[in-house]
Image (tube, rainbow, N blue to C red):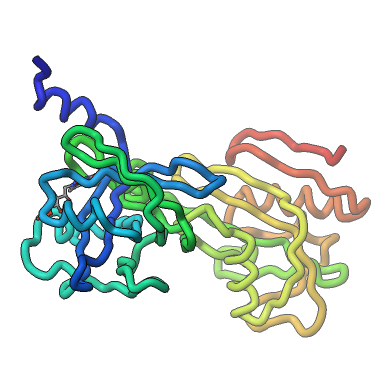
Length: 300
Ligand SMILES: Cc1cc2nc3c(=O)[nH]c(=O)nc-3n(C[C@H](O)[C@H](O)[C@H](O)COP(=O)(O)O)c2cc1C
């Protein structure tokens, strides 16, 4: 005889996301339940599956519905999951939702929605295997809510917890004719840059940050990428150029004098000395490494 508790635990070792499956009953009242049995099944035709349990109060509705929808919950939507798993009152009164083109509720704040026509129903023991043909869907790239062994987890938060205080600096060596734009500080020059908590979208974030301070630079190749393990900081420097008036807070320093200037840190000094040499031949390399050691890569 199968040990059902052990089997449930063993199934629960499969890491999943969390969805809410919705439809309307015969009287038009919305019904829904939390499900992690969601699976993508086929691209052509577009099919997905979910498994409603026979114990659901809404089982008969799901077993006979012509249409249903699946909403994949986002990180932070544990409350929505709990509502659709255990709240006995009107689950839709306390949740943000919008109807799809057929009036089936789509859960607000979800990272993906699928509106389906019922394709196949397969009797499957104490559950029903319900296949839906997707006729419209939406999605975005926010992280989803995870579920493992009866507990929620969130990849974004796990990563942040594993790497606390990680800082990303993205900046640019912006040429202005035969000069480079530097920011004077009491302890020396530094390059215009932006500090970010994520390593994604560096170029776009930098471009926007520079524009916000009046520096409309054309950003080109990546020039130097390195980590500083001591301060848990990741640096990425791009080459750029601009024309027009020098924005307030920046100084145009002649490129030929870069090696002789004082900087806030050694990495910037080393990088700008290399830049000054390479600017003479316009043959720029790429540095990959950390603050102590790394490689200079020449362009093929
Ligand atoms: C994370 C999670 C995943 C679940 N997955 C399913 C599932 O795939 N199928 C299912 O029938 N019930 C699943 N449940 C349980 C149902 O959500 C729950 O039994 C249902 O909402 C109860 O509704 P009722 O009070 O209307 O019967 C899950 C619950 C949780 C918390």
